[in-house]
Image (cartoon, rainbow, N blue to C red):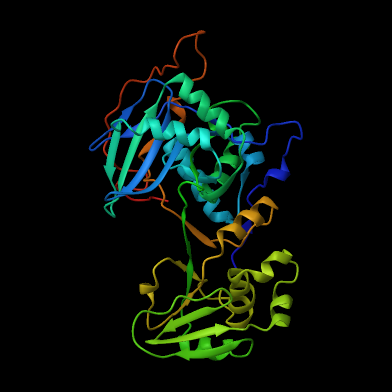
Length: 393
């Protein structure tokens, strides 16, 4: 198993007298157009819609999340890898800000929903097609009254951190490095979606075990669980909760009814709730003890597409956890193992960027927030050398 660090939880730094809702601010964004980036000079919230053909996949609002409120109101649900947090902090410093928002899921923001619906009745300020053909539409909200409704509505709600655990952990570390000195580093780009209106997709993240033939994996698993080979043609069946499907060498096996005594022994010292989490049982019992992956050999790889099965390795398919279970555990401060869930759809990186050097908060009373930085035209290339239409981290 790889070394991990725990994402800071709201209870770690909770100020008992502080508000417990989201503190989301308008900001001066750098928006992507077809061939360049353009700087905005009036602070705005950015309303995002993602569509596939005529189908509305998602609607939410992008703003600059105060990191102090994040430690009170944002509930992470997964542990993180220390090395990935370090990588994200390197990216943050290289970019000078955040080119991709973290994804927050909240529920019941009716007043905010009404404002977003009215804003999206007009023509979008930005429209970009993603690599998968989905459309990403962006509206700027600069009207003070509408901004006030959005800010007040979100201030009454906490949120689940659906995606961006490593980025948020990196931003919190970066913020702490300034010793409490205020500045643009005390906020982070965030997309807030009311999932009672626009439910997120939730998929499992599967595991590929390098160098372990599937026949051997199935034989070893039989010592602690019921293992049956799956016959028949067609795609592999989706596993049920409490079941794993092993794939390799053109064969498939179902692994279920895992010995409870062996599970409890493997998860000794872990949160009690992990006993019912398939991913925890997989990593601590099967990967760590039965198959002994990660000791002197490469650790498991994280796979989204079952088509990535190979003849030499074993692919382990998992069922996704239930979303209500994720919300419940996160609210209780229980973090799941790393790479447990894949929430979506995610916004395109570089669609709108929160750049530290473009922000300013001091202004004469009554004057709009202005930037002294001139407009910029830049090629759509990230610091990672990838085009802006693809995730670079």
